[in-house]
Length: 83
Image (tube, rainbow, N blue to C red; front, side, top):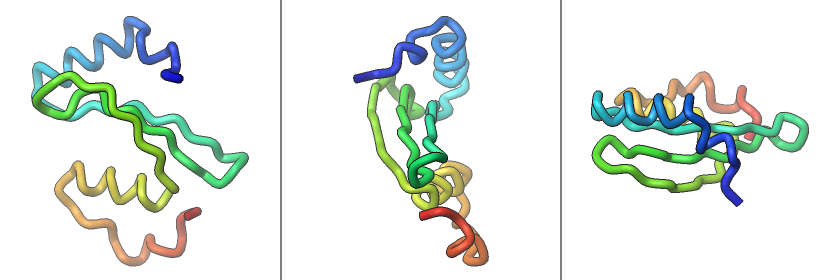
């Protein structure tokens, strides 16, 4: 089930800004009570509107953030994050 917050006007506005700038746009929800898992929704991939859902462990999510910036996650972070 898609969280209703993704359809709020603030999220729509941010997605439109990402679309104009041709930047990917993600919204992430995390659960720090469980195992630091992240539920990530990709709403714009840099080219087209989409609604892709991904589930990540913390290390995977941090790697994604570095990848989006065109960088590799520093090795010293590996093992320090909740995986």
